[in-house]
Image (cartoon, rainbow, N blue to C red; front, side):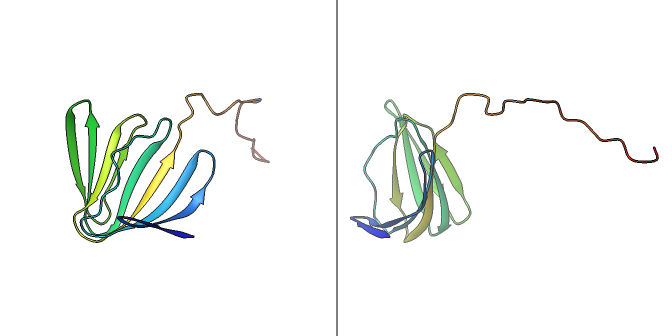
Length: 117
């Protein structure tokens, strides 16, 4: 379901406990709040238009301009904000990283011998 925002609209396309994908439509001049995510990365992928992503590290501000096909990711804990330089359609992808080795092997892989070898 599409939800209206002061800067445009957002629609959750996929949402689970550790991954979310949202399609956003941002009107030229629209911007979101300066904010951070405690445990999730926030990636921006632009489908059309021009989107500015600003990231703060203390008092230092870094600005990236994204055009169609461009992406950038903001790590957890970093203050950030987006601003639409033009009308924009983009995707916000959120994910939490697990800081553990995700595979537990019970056996070791190998290769079967071929018949007649």
